[in-house]
Length: 101
Image (cartoon, rainbow, N blue to C red):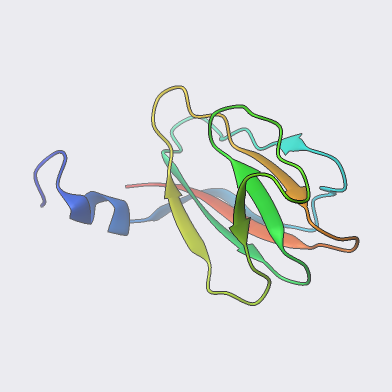
């Protein structure tokens, strides 16, 4: 078992809740983790996604970019993290799973 703070901690993933696909993100949406979730595994399926972690509202050209077709991205969620997402273009299909571990 890795020590607390070990970089390998982010590699462990135990699903929390169901896999979610098809959330409407045509406008900015805050993704709220279920109790116990400390990370999210997220993927853009059909269009790029923009996301922020500090509560700032993402826009089509503002925020980190998750490109459609890229492998899923694992994002650790620290205390106070506010994950907001928006599509860059219409018909974006995000797929995500909350996790811990």
